Image (cartoon, rainbow, N blue to C red):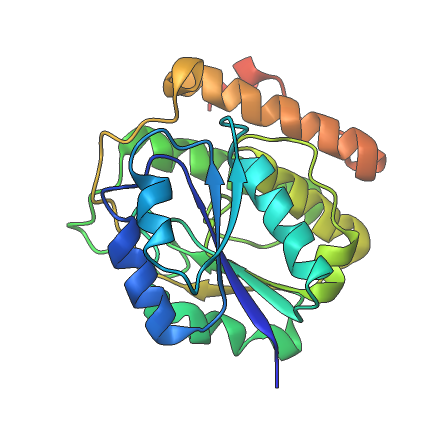
Length: 246
């Protein structure tokens, strides 16, 4: 039987955490919370679930850092696979088995909000959708991946990926490093359709990244660095001005 860990990175998630943990524990027994320096009631709420494993960063290190540590934890504790999901209600724990069922035929199973066209009433923040489309198209053009959603954090990974993958970006661009290494090492990728859910449209990235152009520039910088390191022969990333002009 596949030994599975589900990891949830959190930072100040007191609004949703208890409900997400309750639902997740109904689906899978092994859950890890990576508390990335929360300053609200998140640590207290996690303690009310003694069966949940916890890694805590004393300061906020970033989304990529939280997932990097979840990858390491899964390997060090002998898990065969890892599911990652967010704590903002975008990802439904009941769909974890749908992702895991694909693992015998895939190395990375990635949720996609756009594999099936979203319904007309989907409340997708326009600038987030636009940036996702541009980066997804660029990844496909450079790496031949054929994916439809570059930034969905709802994923399942085989242990073999976790043992080899390197995460150097500690922020929100870490999925770009995942995709570049997937292309470099020939990992098999399968996408699974998941719903588009935005309960909190005002949720911010924080600081300068709340500006869409700054965020896009950051993504392109991380992608360029990842290509230079793992796929230098694919290093044809257009300039920010070219991407913004599209």
